Image (cartoon, rainbow, N blue to C red; front, top):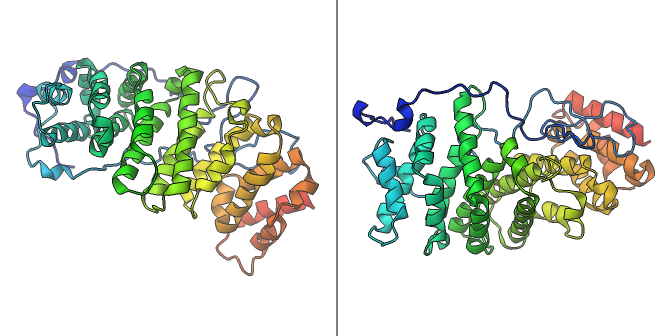
Length: 429
């Protein structure tokens, strides 16, 4: 990205303020342990039982030494550039207070004085500033100038929700402002990101995104539709990836997000053949489902929310071919549901007919990745729930474990994967 030529006389108000030190305590992230009913939501790490004989309903434990957050890259993975390159507009304005206000005024205009070209230019400038290294100053300025309600009003006015460019750009700006950066990101950046996320939720931003999702995407593989869908779920995912924000969301809103996520998966399953954008969208939708199943008990999904909706079959049906990130995220959602006793309360049908076959297939197509995501530990624990005799009747499970242990034919399979396969097979025999 090109540098900004910021003149000393054009410093923003937020740049003149003294940065305060936020609390040194780190925010709880996805898949932490819940304080209610001893339910563990720590499926972000790979799962592996520490004993071959867990008790029924045992919380599946984690063995990976490194965490794998759903937002796993610092290039705004969940906020993808989706419209024409910024180089269309050759003059790059710096993110001064006046320039930010000018851009917001253009998108807030209700008298239709500006062309679509001018509106897109303003949105692209805002997006570029949101992705800059000085995100803190831009976000502070955005809050001071009422940027969040102005974005939402823009989307809710006229035909903005029927325009893929508008939806992509606004969603991308919100995603960039709320993205949780890993590594050496300054705490002040995460503090301002949380403020943006909270303001977005307070002003009904999630409901606006869901409305855009319902109105804009009706199925199919049209590239502009897929890009818009990707950005919508990126913004929702980045907002609720902040645990303190997620825990404060009311249960009714949790259910709205959940229902729309499942509806979107059904549309993707039945109407799209896209192999480029499809996996990206699936990662974002499944990430949202994983977040919703790991928040505070008052707002989290519970077993009754999934009852009679074919939720897990819908999830598996939406997967087309193997994509490591998609399958990993699906696995984390399933583990969260298992740990929150969804299958023990709603019966074992979903577990036997859908979840266990998913993990058996996971072991077949990517055994090492399956190990890292806890497939062996999950199956061991699930065996105690449904009984070992029923587990051994699942098609392919025994033969697949044997294939993994066959060192003559599986040089690419890691030793630790073979060890876990041997433990599981010994337990089932």
